[in-house]
Image (tube, rainbow, N blue to C red):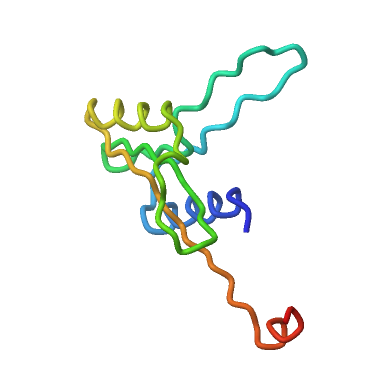
Length: 110
């Protein structure tokens, strides 16, 4: 599963469970020829619902290991901290997707 599919599912879930929420997937900066520096987006998704601001960085894991924070960049952590310090709810949202291999596939792979 690609992370973009998870993002779409997350947005659809918010819209279903919190009707009337304002939810935005923050776009990546487009890569342009000759660009030397592209500012990073502050987080993946933000939501405004019931007067509250939610900042979310979404992570997809395909194994059952924990989330090493070294996988998060310093600017992601700092932007979520800044949002929290200014009254927002700020989260890392973890999605674990582990595929189950069928018995037939297991035998084929040895």
